[in-house]
Image 1: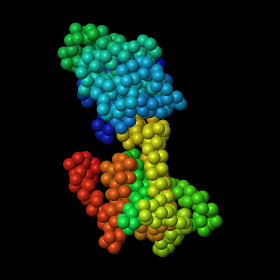
Image 2: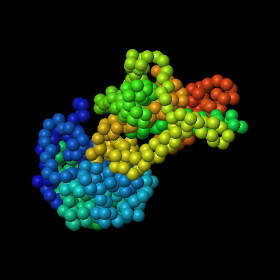
Image 3: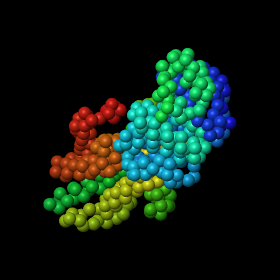
Image 4: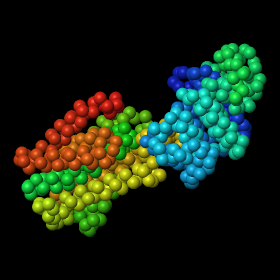
Length: 225
Length: 284
């Protein structure tokens, strides 16, 4: 067990964002959470990261979880290097070598201010910053948002490499279903605060009802990258 | 000509204290988005406390240091009241600091009375560019420059400095990596206290400070900070220089003290000139 969510209910005032969600991520797994806008994906991410307190239900985490937040959330005034170092705030060591090794493009950008970077570069910094916490589980919220498909695909390849090399589990929260299913072996489909489908991505991709209603006519051919 | 040199040099010294106080405003604003109107009170506390510590028998140097540390703690208290409760809107906090400055005035009158104080400083004068300038004023300027440089290093080279900048830059991301943004806010208030207290300690020997000095100080400091766009301590220093020197020149040649009015006019001019580039937040 790495992450176990049981009957999670999250409310904002009278609005229910999550209505009894259960999911799990095992060590070393690549799991996707897909669903349309407003499904409650970010509420789930925040509940897992402890930023939001659930109305009921439990979130159990074994090991360190780091979040790659939606919209990158850079420290704009600070350099790439400083952004990375702050990712290790909770740890003793601020050594950045391992992250630069995994994401070599960041090395030449290290002194640049984060707010001068492109979206794709910032996303890479956000991933690197999360990795500085040496997490067992990486929760990635809307990686592809605002990025060109090629760049998003490249970042996903880095996540795959991370998983292969270090066994870091990844929970990928995505609207881009093709991207998510390309990386992950298992997926949950979230809609209006509920899990409406779950299982191996191959099966989910094939289920016509799910495809039509929630995946917006996703074509399996696009999945192969 | 030596008159001009005198005015310029004393303007520089005054600028040093404005820069310190202004930097305190900038630090708090950057980290918490709160304009700390109690900043001037810190100056007054610094002056009175250093006098009291002298009277209690502490040696020179140590009494000033003790005063600065105590004002740092006062800053922490002000911060605690202003931003301690989570979810307080920055505008509300601004009003709270205004209220705290009134409370501070009451405390000062109760403890020390309404008379001004001018503790002994560093005696003597120095001859520069054909003008006599009090050593204390030069020391004020020198300390201000060194302090600003130290602060600059703090923000760029230390982990805690980066964390302060991060909390200012993106509070959400800061919380995500585990930075306690409220603690950072309180720290910024403590730093502002130290800076204000230091300004009070330095300026009081040459310019008597009383309970009513807080308003001119906070307005001049605010003008300097606005000159720096409420962001840059070094541009705040430049603003303070403009302000201090202009004030002294006017005092010398026009034979009257219009320091506060100059500060207000400068703020007005800057705000009008920059009004197109201000964000909605800053304009407030």
